[in-house]
Image 1 (cartoon, rainbow, N blue to C red):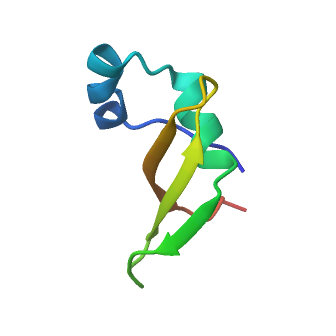
Image 2: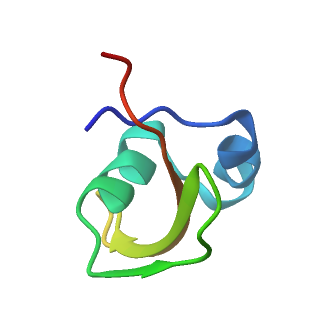
Image 3: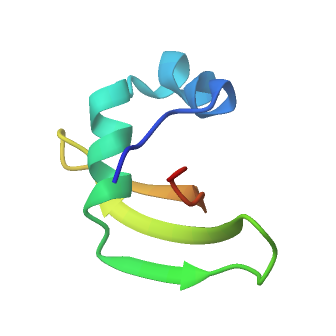
Amino acid sequence: MSVKLHASARNHQVNQGLTDDGIILAAEFPLWVEPLDDENPQRELRLGFDDAGRLLETVVLLIAAAS
């Protein structure tokens, strides 16, 4: 799985001290995943911890890789 951060994911970084690596870690290794809809691309709500142990809520778009 290749994870790319959308620019809006960085809106909280300045105020909360989050890093790209921490956000990606939380998204790639979630403790809980819940589908949000059946649209294309599908969105998932994920809860996971960053590299500082903070619980993050992320929304991940599942986009099929080009063949």
